[in-house]
Image (cartoon, rainbow, N blue to C red; front, top):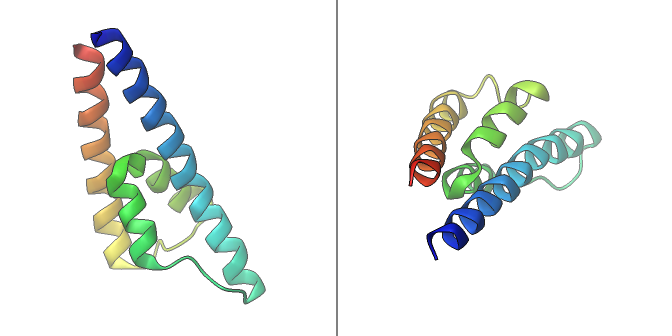
Amino acid sequence: MKEIFSTLGAAYLLVMNLIGFLQMGIDKRRARRGRYRISERALIATAYLGAGIGSFLGMYFFHHKTKHIKFRIALPVAAILTSILAIMLFMR
């Protein structure tokens, strides 16, 4: 039973981090094209729902929101929390 939860937890974190990474790229692309954007609240919420590492990496990979102090603080904290969650998940 623990193995199922570990597998599901790992899959959740993997998918969420991929979503967080892609969200940053999509929002950057939309910003360049002057199109409808993903809200800052949604970007940060996704990071805190398990996509901290992906969102943080996406921020620097796409050079998106790197000048916003809100993101320079919130995303590293989310990445640390996601890392702690992943470590706890795999240590069980």
